[in-house]
Image (cartoon, rainbow, N blue to C red; front, side, top):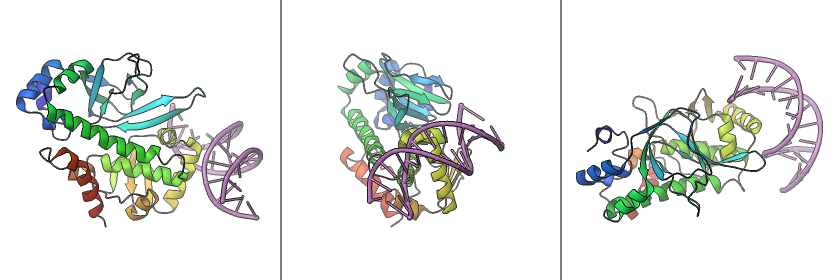
Length: 265
DNA sequence: ACATTAACTATGT
DNA sequence: ACATAGTTAATGT
């Protein structure tokens, strides 16, 4: 096993949680050295011909596409354990840009090698499927609200979804989180202008829902925030309720949502 | 560069 | 008429 795999911060929750020692050994031979991307840098950009998929080890990234009108749409957020780079266009180019929101460490794995490896490792393949599907569901909650929800509701959806995926910080209360995204990023993720995001956050602060400053979010009223987000939200992030990888794959994620909702209801 | 605020405009209810 | 959100511009941090 590679030394960086032994110290991997997403060894428990990420893809490799379902890998045996022998499989981890094999993955170690196909993976590339870790990538370190400073905040503001790109893992890859729209149009690039990347042969890698990446497992995020540390830090946050925004996955986005750019429109002709100069504006961009953030499609999803990647954080420790997230996998990016699976989507390629027919000509093998990347259809989106992955930009580091914080200093980032990513584990690059050649797409073709991983595909070949999956043919020998069904459990790993199923876990990959499950993890990608779970993130897709989370992402669709945001994207699906863009056409129908108000500014307050869209922002509430975003914040609740990010809090649920955020691994809990040791020591910190459940109501306070590091949220390393600017209002501009919130705007690009919610389809609002940054000016209106600022106005809306001011209203939410005045309504004693939350406070958000200097990259930290304090939630003061989970009930109302979850109501706005149309979610049965628990302050506990997924990692606290993520069932063990030995469960049947098709029961993992249902368990996550059920457990998350029963904690507050 | 990002956040905030105000004044104004367009659109939908 | 009112609410919501975009635009523009000025100012602050």
